[in-house]
Image 1 (tube, helix red, strand yellow):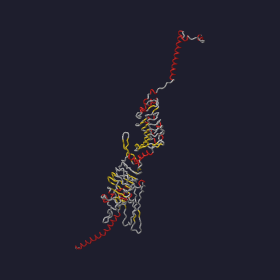
Image 2: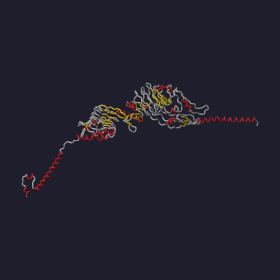
Image 3: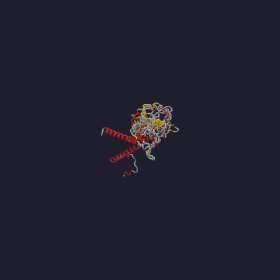
Image 4: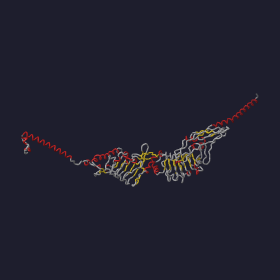
Amino acid sequence: MSPFKHRCTLLWLLLVLLTGHARARPEQQQQQQHAVANQPLVDKREDGHSLTAPRPDDDELATVAPTTTPVPAVAIAQGAATGAATEATHTQAVATAVPATSSTSTSTTVPVPLLPAAPEQPEYLKHCFYAEEHLCMFGHDGQGNEAPDALGHVSTTPESDSQGFGAQINVSQGHGQSLERNANSCQCHEHPVKANSWYCCNISQMSMISSCSNISKWSNLHVRNLTVPIMDLSNPIFRSLQSLAVTDGNITKLTNAFPRHSTLKCLNISNNNISEIPLRMFKDVPHLEFFGMSRNNLSLVPHHNQNKNITVDISGNMRMLCNPLNEIINNDSFNFVNPKHSYCLYNATHEWFQSTDLVSVEQLESTKRCMTKCPVIPDYGNCKCRFESIMIIQDDQSKPKCHVDCSNLGLVELPPTLPDNTFVLNITNNKITSLGDHFQTNPTYHNINRLVADNNQIASIYEFEGTKFIENFQRIYMRNNSLSKIPEYFLNNALMDTGRRIYLAGNKLQCDCNSAKTLQNWLKERSTDIPDYMEIRCRNIPQSVIELQEAKLCQSPPDWTDYIYYLIAAEVILLLALITKVSYDYWVFKTSGYLPWPASKMPKLPCDWLCES
């Protein structure tokens, strides 16, 4: 074969190969595009989870009708929704596919289980707006697409290359763009469901909100993850809002107050690490109904002017102080959310030390009943009641101490009822003569810890016997009353506990020998428990009990029965003397024949002849 023919053969073979490869390339590209189209669409979120949905074939898909169920804005006063609930929200789309190759069009519906209905909002949250958490974590319109901002702009990401190899979401590129966005551009978006409601995510400067053009038309705003050291409440951004939520951020301090004549009805600043807020931030907010300040580092609740019955959530503020909070409770200004699990710090002063204890708002609210149930006694007047302190008891429980003052009213008997947890009852300078059965049968008297009953006419304290009061009391003041006796037998058991005191000065007892023997010694033994024992006096003797002398009081008066014994003794002695004399005379008569001198002088009697014979 000549060299020329050999070259022609090689050229012909090369031409055949190139022609076959050219014919195969369109089919290969079509297969690659078909494979990419069949791959599930993968969307990666910032939290690391991915949401997948199957993609129908291009040659079978005629129409795709997304029937996304709108998700209502649920007010979550205690915090944001969990990530699991967010993922469930994203998978609500239902696609209907119609094959194009079929002569008869059919539709296939893929059922997706519905989410449970959102719980009904409390009445105090009816004006509150909260954007769902997934709007910040996943596509801004809730479906994987970027929603337009307040200026009408949409940020897009290329979804296909020039060769047509399918769509791909570049997560790292989108994240890099979000970090480099201009701080002077609006970063807020309109809520996909609720009108005139906007939300902003990951705000580091307030200019990202103030640069929006239609702020004056906003009614509701929710800012998530606002990171600024100071937030100025007088900012015009908040002027037209009815609901403002700034949650899950990092703010140190709030300054100034809301704009004048603010229409704000709901305010939530929960979970922001806030440690300082202005006390008069509500002075020009007359319509506020809910204020959420939970999970911060706050110690005080702001004051108010014309706001009444505001619902407040202070849970999670572990630096909240009880004393200023108690003033707000007594003024009947606020209603508290979850008072049983909202706590404040109470400084308790004990006998030897001081402590700081946690007291729930529910327990603190019970102090208000001290004022509302204060005794009103017809024809005499009104008692005065005040909250004194809080008593910390076992199991982290506490009780408020109510002080009831019914002194100087001219009362003749004890008040019929007292406020709950009455620990101090003052009834001095009245005309009370008897304690009655109040301490035995009246439950409102069982918690009394200190009874002040000086300058009355009380005649007996035997009514204390067997009562809860005598088991739990710490102080009894019974000075200048009309006590006639002191019941040592049950007071002795009551004073076994150290620290208890009874004051009895000015009482005039009925003194007797028993007073000098028993009562005097008992008072000396209980001198610590009865500090004024030396001022207890006797009504029948011008002496104090401690000055009584047993020798004088215990002398018995003359008794004629004692002389009978002396008379009997004398008769016995005379009888013995007579017997002795007769025996002696008889002996003399027998021995000498002489009769005793009395016998010789006696005249003879007619019966003497009997003796002589």
